[in-house]
Image (cartoon, rainbow, N blue to C red; front, top):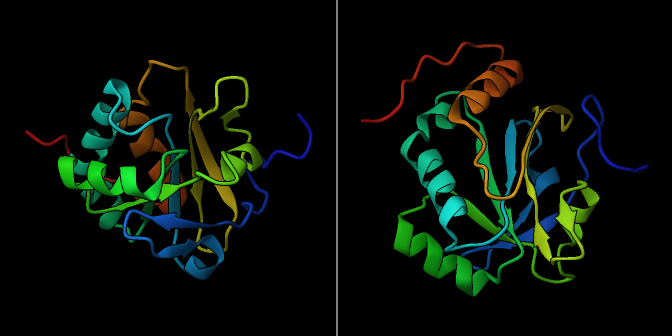
Length: 164
C-alpha cells in the first residue's frame, strides 16, 4: 500500500475528540513523544484486556513523558462510558466520523469490517514514527513489545516491571 506512514517518516497529523469531547491534535503535542494505539472496539474482550494492561503499567509511558493516545472507531460517548467503567486516565480518541479516517491514514483500518486494526505507532518529540507494533485480530500486543519500542523511542531502558 503506497502512501502509508513508515518508520522514519513524519506521522500523519490528526485532530480527534477524546472521551470528554476535547479535541486532541497530534501536531499540538510536538515536543512530547506520543504512543498512538489503535484498537478495534471499546468494551470488547481482547481490547479491554489490552488497554487494562496499559492502564496498569502506565508508568512505562509516564516515566519517560510519553503521551498515550488510544484510538478506536467508537463514538466519544461510548469512549466516555468505557473510560469510566475501566478507570482509564489516558485519552481515548474517537475516530468515529469520517468513520476510520485516521486509522486509514495510518494503514490500520479494515474497511470491509469497519474497525481499526490492532496497531501502535511510537512517535518521537519531532513527530517522526520511530517504532510500530501490530497484531492480528484477537491477539493482544505483548507488554514486552511496548517496553522494547519505548526503549527505541526514549533511548532509556524502562525497568518498570509488570504490576502485581
